[in-house]
Image 1 (cartoon, helix red, strand yellow):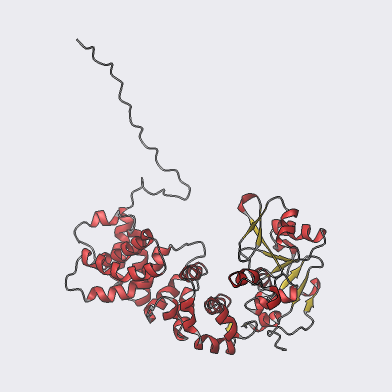
Image 2 (cartoon, rainbow, N blue to C red; image 1 turned 120 degrees about the vertical axis):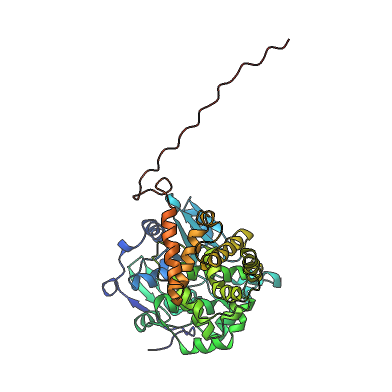
Amino acid sequence: MVDNTAGIATPPVIVPRSEHNISRQQIDDDTLKVLYRLNRHGYRALLVGGCVRDLLLGRQPKDFDVATNATPNQVKKLFRNCFLVGRRFRLAHIRFAGGNLIEVATFRREATAADLPDDESEHRHAAENVFGTPAEDAFRRDFTINSLFYDIADFSLIDYTGGLQDLVDRKLRVIGDPWVRFAEDPVRMLRALEFAARLDFTLGPRAQAALREQATLIETAAPARIRDEFLELIRHRVAGKVLRSAAGCGLLGPLLNGYDGDETTYALFEQLDRRPATDPVTEGAALALLFLTRFRARCDALETHSVAAAAKLAGQLLTPHCAYFHIANGIRHQARELLVGCYRLAQGRGQRGENRFLRNPCTAEALRLYTLFSMTTGVETEIVSAWQQAAVATRTPAAIPTEPGAARPPRRRRRRRKATAPRAQD
């Protein structure tokens, strides 16, 4: 295969409709409306990025991105329901009924010195908004498999970077020089591990080498972006694989503010990743799971074994991490309560205040994490079983419907007190 990731101007590979598996029936109706209207008015209208990749892999995309040669203002004139967003990277958002939002981006290219204004403070904004061709736009993207286009004009696929062959070979390759691309945006290193885990692809050797050499650059990324990307790992159920891979290439510590992972924690997240896709995980639960192994180890070393001492220890573990990533106090409090709940569960049944503890709103989630820990490590299985039986016994028929959709018993209405006439004054 010819390596065409360096931006060399070569003719693209064009695959006609008869030779690929993408059908318009797989594309969202609102997206088709946008593509057709752009095409009718003489503009190029292409699907691009992850949606094309997922369709080719037989997956259902979570959203559809449209690329066009129409400028954002030209797109806005075609759609009354269009709103322009972003100062640094101008995009058109077209909103439809039901909250469906289609993102439309104009083809971009790399800026030259002639494209930049005299004011250096405006260079970054100007560099992101230099319009180009589909080929130039493809080479600005991160990975070859994310640079594929689907053309609504003739339903063909367009490949400028060799992404189609990489899909067949199940390889993840960076477009351009990995050392340069990772330095431009260090978060690409985390995304490389994420895509490799999600798609079960192999990361290219040059990308692996660049990632190992430049892992510390991830410290320069905005903490808010890292936090969002970490939650994406949880949502896509690949957190365990990515955390393990990040540790193996020296990325984990710089990624999570010096976090020192361990085998049990990676296994815990891998166990969590096996849950159904419809089973959400809160950020507080993910945060508690991240520190659960360390928390239990330090609890064993406490001089005084009490809930208050465990709560203090949980706070000491969580506070630096939450401060660095600007995590709200409410989420930190939830994570602390879950860790303390796991400590309380590990003490076994028969402790003072057990009934109150079982009715605490956090106990059910704490028991879930504690059960996960027991399943992963094989310890304290009898204690888990005892608590699960107690939790079932605590649930009363009035509190939980016996069947899905069953109505709860009606509440007894309180009687109003009759108003009394005011006393007559003498």
